[in-house]
Length: 272
Image (spheres, one colour):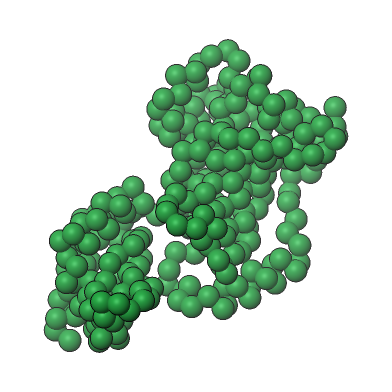
């Protein structure tokens, strides 16, 4: 059996410096979700991820897994004893889990997050407490009680977040644990569809007045979170779309609070 490793992933100093440069150079990053919040939201918001374990000979081995996330953001994995990644974990508990945003267009423009840490099997009371959390994320996991499936949890040591081209950072375990998934994520698609279908004129008004783009003639919402929303705006029928970020007056936690925040922005834009 290979020797058991230490449980802390050390981020190279040059990578930490790269993170600081990236955050400092990214327009509008302040007042938006932090990369820790984005990481928590993404890991919790997708049902499958890529698990990388260390195989025989030290070669990395990637596989597809279903996962859940506990209240601290730690990935929960239900793994078969017959799976190659389970055998690998028996020899070396270090692993990483990469979750990828779903969407259209260039896959490299989508966000992804890699969580690194040590994976441990949960037994007894710990398993009993964590299993309902896993099953809530994976309601179709009928095999959860099979004798050859065991529940595991990753103790996070560090996190790498990539938000598309030109945005990347390392997130510490403490930052990741302290962050919260965005509460609007389960409702975001519905909010975006509603705003684009029923309130396209308000989106144009927001850009004209609140974003200081008075020549805007069309706009469409492409994302929303607890702090605000993203719009693609254009100044004319044939003009290229430009990304615009608009912020709520205060963070919101529910779709109803988001609706009220939108109404407040409409009032402020009209009064201006």
